[in-house]
Image 1 (tube, rainbow, N blue to C red):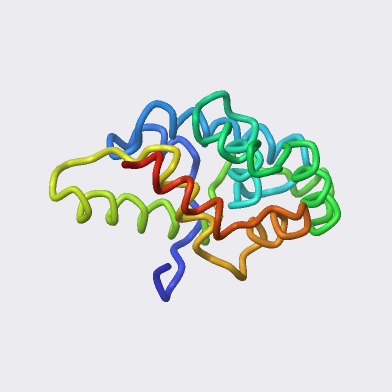
Image 2: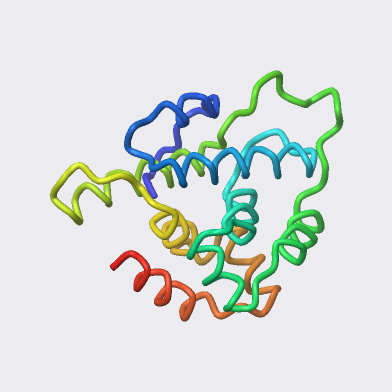
Length: 160
C-alpha cells in the first residue's frame, strides 16, 4: 500500500473508472450495501471482503470452498467495528482512504503485470485485500479459521 493515504472519495468516482471490470464495480456496490447494512460511515476492506465472499462468481466460490461464509464474516465485522451513530451517516457513500489505496495499487499492479491496459478483476481485489496480513479482512478470515495463504494461492490460479 502507498505510504500516505488519500482522502476519502465518493463511491461514484470508482464506478466511473474504466480500470475496473463490471464485476469489480458490482463488488464495490455490494460493499456499499454492506456498509449501509452494518451502519458504518466508510466503505472499507471488511465490507469488500463480505461482498467478495457473497459473490456468485468464481472468486466467491473460492472463498466459500476455503470455509468462509458471508454470515460469519459479517458477524466478525460487527464485533470488531461498532455501528456509527445515525447522525454520522454520510449523505453519499464514500470509500475509506485505506481501500482507495488498495484499489489504486491493485489497478497499477494489474497494468504492470500484463504490460497492457488491463481491468481489475475480482481475484485481483481479493489478493490485494488479503496481502495486508494486519488488516481487518485478514483478521476476520483468521477468526473464521480460513487459511489465508492457501486462499491467496487459489485466487492466483483464478487470475491465470
